[in-house]
Length: 272
Length: 204
Image (cartoon, rainbow over all chains, first blue to last red; front, side, top):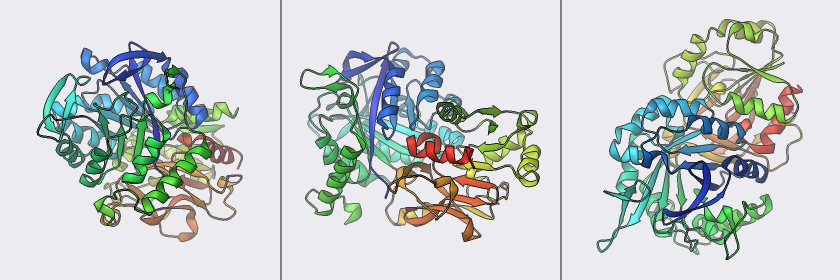
């Protein structure tokens, strides 16, 4: 059985690891390489590392840091931040990164997805959709540059276009939920799951393992990524890198699948 | 020594690091000369089939590899696209494969998407090894490995299937024929499960 992927998402800012709230207020939480080593020991399913400075500063990806991360990482690694060309993506995959993530560059120039896909293969192309609820009219729009620029593009339509262009995975990041630790946007997750036929990963809002279970119960086998949950502990948000132990993860997944089987939560139309 | 074939694709550093942690000597080879003395060969690979074949061809290492594998019978392990390269060819491209595993590399697309399964096949899946397959010795019953692919190997000879996994259909996620092995999943990124099979390969 293919299992849901439970994925720590790490943000790099000024060389250190940070966690944001609503895409702002970066708080230093440690050293990236040290965090990778801890997640190796915890045997996390995958790891997502996003450099949140590169695009904003108009900088190239930091290849030296990426090489270091890839060499340390004993689980599949997805890297994003500053990738604007297929040549850069190819170089990053060549450093031993399984998946490259692009976001604002794909909003500016959607053909980039097809170009990267042709170079490194669809399975290694991830498009991150930073989505924010639209006021009044509803729906979600894609924002870029750490949620400072509104592209005015519909998030679901953009994800569909990205999948058509050759994205092998969509990471759907809820700007509204980022760092709030109050749960995922399940409506958004279900809408996307039913709209495309490539793997998806949802990010933004996890405050507990129950929140992760809710996603699996609602939309099935997807990736469930979290930042705060895996770097903070307790109500006071003390920094403590953590990840569920194998038996805890097994119980969470089987409980979620049971709930899904009982139809206790809305099931996706895909499977009805 | 265990030698990782470095023709420009795949995570050579990850294999070297895994073996380093296990205190097993391993090195990378980027030229025919550097292949001399290899007692185990690992052929990694990611990306498109034709691109991988072209790079291997361009590396100048193919004749030496053929000598080592076909004549000297050095054990070789192909991983991911490196496994697909062992076949005679792929639906993904036009190039011929190495032909060490009779059969072809097929696309999941048609059958799976009709069944509603997302593609690529991405994530941790259960693997069922064939009884007595040495590469999987000592693994827990619930062993799982990390997959990331849209194509799979269809063996012409079912006896070559060393392990199967299910994703819409049961496919050969590992193959073994004489001194040639292949794995569709990534042992170098599959935590202690992957370490076990890489150690088994070293100790064959």
